[in-house]
Length: 124
Image (cartoon, rainbow, N blue to C red; front, side, top):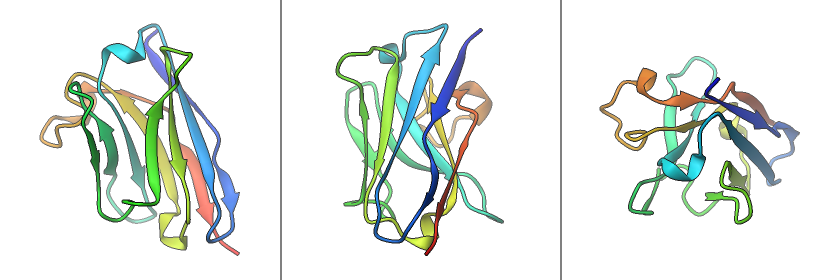
């Protein structure tokens, strides 16, 4: 079965840090562009970070300078989302995704592999 499995997440205070992990099963993650999305309550899912096939990174302004993503150095099937200086407005369900066109916002989400989602809540 082809899938992505996420771990991490939870409750963190404003200004804190958190790292999410995502592992592929049934396919090799390094063969695909990868991305992180999030969906806040009452809002549409949005892409926030993406590493494309040419290794270029796309970052949306709302997380630039605070969030980064990376592939594991010692695991071809793992990726991370590193979140620093978290704000209450970062509260959302976060999803990892992978696929040939995952960095193309015009491509239907159903074309990608998705993680199950993990809740991140930023609150004091």
